[in-house]
Length: 418
Ligand code: UD1
Image 1 (cartoon, rainbow, N blue to C red):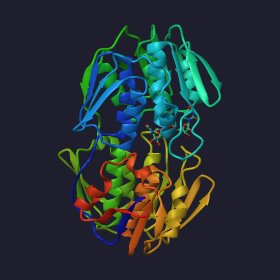
Image 2 (image 1 turned 180 degrees about the vertical axis):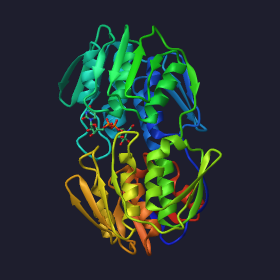
Image 3 (image 1 turned 90 degrees about the vertical axis):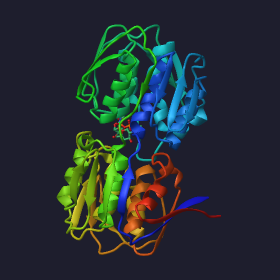
Image 4 (image 1 turned 90 degrees about the horizontal axis):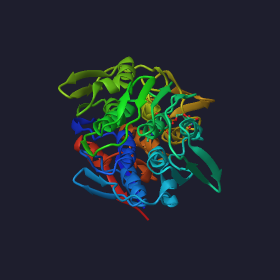
């Protein structure tokens, strides 16, 4: 069994390069199903989730080659309309292939998805969107089935700006007959990136990145070559790590615009930041103060940075409050941070954090992907050794995380234990 061992106390120092965004690449791979030509994704992050979605596509007879950060996808021979259910259950994002599959084949059957254990995570909004476009949806025995003779554009209002539902419905609408208008759509940068990818294949999507997206159906899409946006959550994770160790690092290859909500909150804490070229310098050598954070859909503060911020606030004297509004069960890391000497109480959707002078290293478990990152961050600042288990969660979404931290001077390694 593999674990990550961190010895705390080193100030981070140096430069780190940010990989492409996992949450942009997954829907981009899914959307390649819409096209029979070859699609090439450059600078792809070599992550477990990317490998899993590639395996899901292979299980419907996609020909995918991954080499040197390049993913070459040939979907000219897709025949199977039922992906491997064991693979699908491994990762919730597998469900992102549904819109494209209904659109291309008029029928599709998929096992209900799995994924990070951070809440109930229903898929009703995805399915309501497919129904509005003319698909008939049926449930049974842990599967969802969809049939549609043809998809026809419609006006769809999302009850909540779900990222996945926005992407899935957008993919289903690209080849539908006529116009689709998606209102109260999610505005995350990854949605704009998916739209840019699809438009580079000949789709007609306007307004992605705002709350109203208009999709004019086209007859077919052609192959493309595309480089996805940088990972704002990976960048944010390194920013928080620099702050908690009171270090000074340069983070290369970011899009500052996408990091606005994270930068704003770090500034409020007292972290100094300076934009340079395509990077940002983070200087944690300052007095920090406690703050309140509420997670919100973009451009609000991202729920995917909530656990990492929790670790930082756990070390800042005074009382901070984090309110989690996106997922109802995203506080599982709190028990682990408290094992390290944190003083955090949960009150419904709020976490009340009393900052302590110092965390102490111990055995902890990554309860989900970002919780795992939060525990590494806590370990970097804690006294002594922190051993993090269940690191397969972390490998789902971070490229070479311990190597990147090591390059920044952290005392961190991956160890094999019985
Ligand atoms: C995506 C991200 C994930 C991030 C999340 C919120 C990917 C691969 N994953 O997940 O990292 O944490 O956005 O920014 O991009 N909901 C419904 N019905 C639905 C769909 C969602 O009620 O049909 C609810 C969910 O239960 C949740 C909220 O909407 O409470 C947000 O979920 P959503 O935006 O859909 O997240 P994902 O797309 O799953």
